Amino acid sequence: MVLSEAFLLLLRAALKGQFTEDTTPLSSLGETEWKGIATIAIEQSVSGLIGDAVTSIPEETAIPDNILYYFISEKEKAAMIGRRMALLAKNVSSLFREIGLHPILMKGPATAAYYPHPELRSYGDIDLYFTKDEFDEARALAAKESVVTDAGDGSFHFNMEGVDVDVHRSYFDLHMSDSDLPEISSPEASIIMLSAHAMKHACGTGLGLRQICDVAMAFKYWEGRYDPDRLEAALRTSGMVKWQTLLSSFIINRLGIEVFCPGGRTISDIPLLTIVEEGGNFGHHASGRMEAFGKSTAKRKADTVKRFLKRLPFSLKYAPSETLRNVTSLTVGNFKKKA
Image 1 (spheres, rainbow, N blue to C red):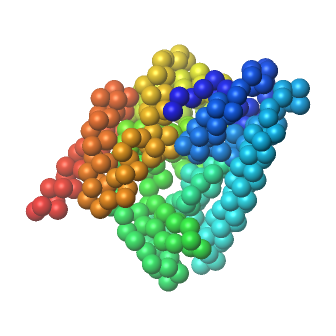
Image 2 (cartoon, rainbow, N blue to C red):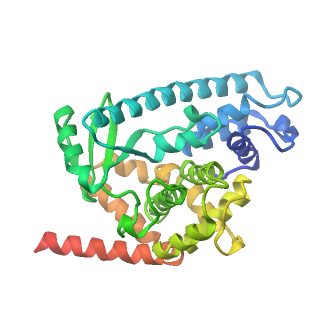
């Protein structure tokens, strides 16, 4: 799926909350091009955002009524789901707060607030973080409410009103201690958490625009409140400088949002663009990926490993420290299982 310039024009408008570019080229799009934009929006999980932009196109830029009605429907559908998810995230958090715990919303539920229209940022599950002192108590409470499933990374998840709730003991998707990075309540921590999450998926099965937009909107939201020097120091500590340079370059070049870039200079974003266009949201739309999901757990894991190995040249170039830590962790884990 090629990210057409028309699609990116609409996405940039949605992220900025208004059109800042000439919309005349949209008038010349045919039904095939509009269907292509709709398909990309679905595969990148940004249908609500694109729907918002299309329904905000200036009247002098004529588009077919059927196209307009379709995107109005997509926007309303996304908003309805978004409002329900926001309410559920609030209720889940309250469940833990009522017994004196202090959950911190992560990823989707927290990031939605960074957007011009929070309800249009789609997410399918709810992520919470608890400190080590509260994690076990949180798990005990969750077990009273639903069936709890433990994950290999130390987190657990449970179901609430048909929605998966993932509960994490680590705030950052990194193989290092949270204490080595900025305080979790800080703007720098929020940015690094989202960037590390995007890096993890880029080096794994794939990365879509939704997670990249999250990082862009976090920078925009925290502009003037985060410390660039402190952020760069944390990026160096975590080994994320090369990755953040690539990610920031993509955000600046494709999304038109000026964000912090380590070293102050952008680089070619083609390696990341290739990953985004190849598989979309979490790489789910890459060739053969959905077929693997319809098979056994063993075959799904085998497909994930295959994609991880395929991505190694990219991972070793842009996230060498984390990739080596990941390989070491996997090796030790498998050795212990065999022992």
